[in-house]
Amino acid sequence: MEFHDNYPQYETMYQHDEAHGKQIRSKLWKVFWLLLAITLVELFVGFKATSWGLLGGTFLKFFFITLTLVKAGGIVLVFMHLIDETKFLRYTILLPYSVFIAYLIFIILVEGTYCGYPHNKTNLDKNYKIQQIVLRNHHAQPVPEELKEGTTEKEIIAAEKDMEERSHAAASETNEE
Amino acid sequence: MSHAIEFDEKTAWHGGQSPFRISYGKMMMWFFLVSDALTFSGLLCAYGFIRHKYESVWPVAENVFTHFPFVTAHIPLAYVGLMTFILIMSSVTMVLAVEAGHRNDRKGVTLWLFLTIIGGFMFVGSQAWEWYHFIEGTATGAMRQVWDIDQGKYVTKLIHGANMTYNEYGVPQFANFFFFITGFHGFHVFSGVIINCIIFINVLIGTYEKRGHYEMIEKVGLYWHFVDLVWVFVFTFFYLL
Image (cartoon, rainbow over all chains, first blue to last red; front, side, top):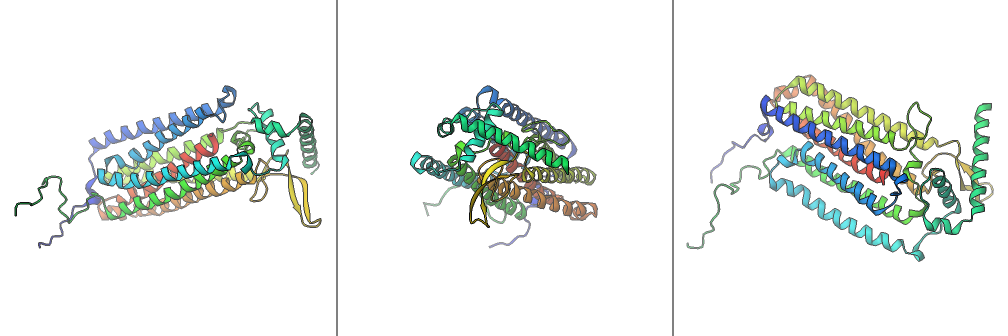
């Protein structure tokens, strides 16, 4: 068996000249503008979601998750150069991860559905419910049906008044200081 | 023998070299990142589970993170948008440092790495600001059942801000997950900045010039991009959804 120590120099394998560098740089900036544009779109939709009545909806969830995955792809494949690596390495990184996470998400969905059944729900302090109704009413956000059920109109109005009085008291206290 | 296995000479792996065509250090960095990605995915999945359980009373991020520096108005999402911009920006400066390293351009590496470090410090500072306002809370406050040690029972009290036990904005689990996930990510950013600083000093004193290649920038860059990648997911699941 022959012995040799002329291994390839992996450290310098990906070096390139100025002309090639220019090409790579323009590609990197393109990906950056794409990431920035996606982020701005996400922020805009997130900002408008309430008034468009999309908040908490399935469409919004899939919309955001899809855009996030596009961004993640841009970062992993281009910024981390995974697309330039050998096919073997690419799948060694991506496949085990994807399999584990797909399984984890599957478990979470199954268990999450189970704990969402009415008889499995945890009894919550009424303060949490009233607070969410008050907050969402103030900022014109949709209030879930199940929240409205337990609390009466009177209670909410009283809670709102109470919160306002306390905030005035807190404000005057800080003024005195 | 007639049953010899035939194989293509061009694609066969002859041994004596990595089938990945990648150096040891870079491969180990990738393996570390996969394990770290699994950790973060586990945390985010747990977050999703608890959020689903308390769906009806889970605070809407728009009602929690409404502050912006030097402005008193109610502007949701703007501050976290700025933080995301800072991190994406520092990610692109890092990848440009890696590219400069591939051309053995010491000046380019110095410039871009320096900008990356600045971006990292800005992000860590922004997160500290965000935590401060989350812990401090609003003047309005909220009513909570608080354990009174003298009376030996729960009494309804007005509380401000959030900590591990009480959360002004909603169920305490929201604050717990916020502290743990953004804290874990912030710690990653912080250690990334420290590593970047060490590498920056090495670039300045010419360690990689002597070595003949700037592969270390690439390895550290992988870690830095991973931090950005995690933030993309935290941003979506914590602030947008």
